[in-house]
Length: 353
Image 1 (cartoon, one colour):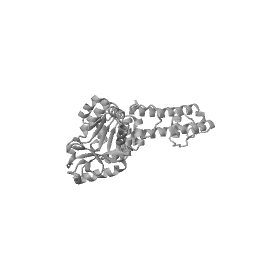
Image 2 (tube, rainbow, N blue to C red):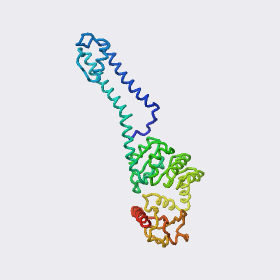
Image 3 (cartoon, rainbow, N blue to C red):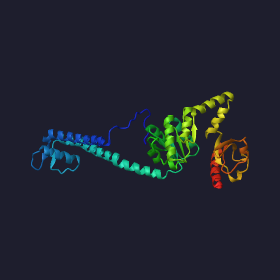
Image 4 (tube, rainbow, N blue to C red):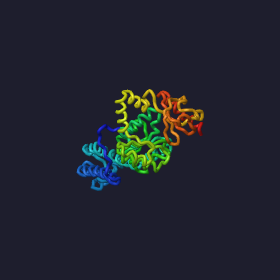
């Protein structure tokens, strides 16, 4: 998808396919009519070697064989004016006619066939990818953070209805799809059932909730994270099937309040959230070697929370004093150890299974 100058207004063409083709054909016939008209008025500059008389049918015949470059030679321009007209006008008309038909064939046949083949090829390779519905400010920040954390941009599928946003996403290396993410067919084309995770940030709470509902219907087991702006919409978002509901307004309020009681708290929280900080949060399953040990005994990072049967327990609660098989721990690790943490996750998953 080609980059477009910023601020360029774009709108989907309202012309149906048949009318678009009709305009192209009309343009070609208009150019042919121009050539026939000029040849007729300047017929004295033509010579017919067959009968010496140039009729209107002869003009149509001569114009057609000239534009199609057939040129049998039975009718030929003999005056300088007629030859210059054929050289300077008929030749460009011939080129325009060819471009019209080649362009039509490309747009309505070759391009569609190519796009379908390319889409099918991409879909075959989509496994464990991340689907992002909405590439506004939040969605683009999520992509930047995912790439910084080591995610291959090609494994990120961005869905948006705005062509300019998709052009920006494609420039980042993402796979893009233009369409309405509330529709089943769009999410199915993105192979949401084989996705690793789904991020929904449509800009409107009602649209985000509807996308979440559609995604959960199509992918019952895929984690879905959604952003909502209104606190009242957090419950509907969870009811729609969201695994995580993030309210950026509430989070910003928490950071502002924390900055009043401690000038370094909000800075540290931002440090934890970003891969560019000195430390970051990591989530993984416990390994067999850690079963029975307290959360404080893990060696890969600083354990802060345990999830057991879907319920969270802090490091100070009794449940965190003896880790169990199947527990998920959240730990603080140095940012440079992000790759080590990912390897630990994979190694721990293999050992548990």
